[in-house]
Length: 269
Image 1 (cartoon, one colour):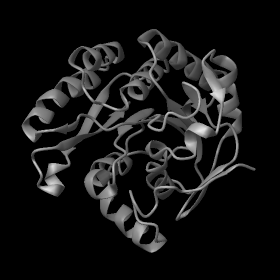
Image 2: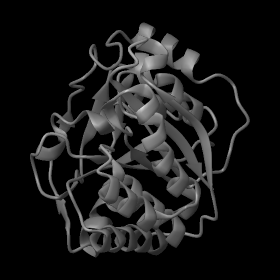
Image 3: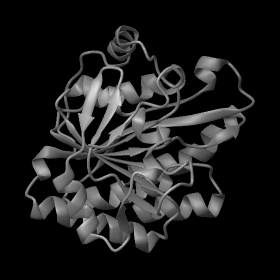
Image 4: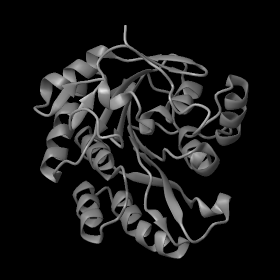
């Protein structure tokens, strides 16, 4: 069995299980639960973005399968990399890949490939796992990383994922997580202005508008491709609206207002 080790534990989040659990409990206070089919969550170090991610995960009703879609920061592997078997280790335990769902997506998509290389050093999916584990320790995952895709390719992949979910009759068991940060290393006031363009398109449930806005304004949103795919997929699966849960920048923690990163938490229902 493929075992993917935790490579950013101790950097992006605590490697000590007790410390990690304490942080997660701070970020995920008791909350009213929402029956969601999708979400947008950041993937920076928890000290900066943990409160935004936690504000989303604390509101999610537990699901059995999390399809996690993130950007490929490392450049390894194919454009659409699906790790189809094995498990991911985190300090709290391990999370099993749902091979049936993963292989169905690969079967249905002309772009998706069974690959582990893109995942070995990629942080964008790993940082979601402790939150998911806290929500449901028995949850299974489908890890997907994406490089640059056209908007047409995003829709095609979304159709493949939606078809897979429908054919397996698991719509009530799954949730799609788009892992992304927003603008990078702009002054705080400029970041908030630029990010508002992105947030508006996400709030309006407009995947094509999001894609085109990021391209037109050259916005450094690392996970706009995963977010576009997630929005298309959830729309195809019958979702009706997006709720913006929280927005923040790193300056709220670092107090460095000259170069910030923007973070968004949103839920699709």
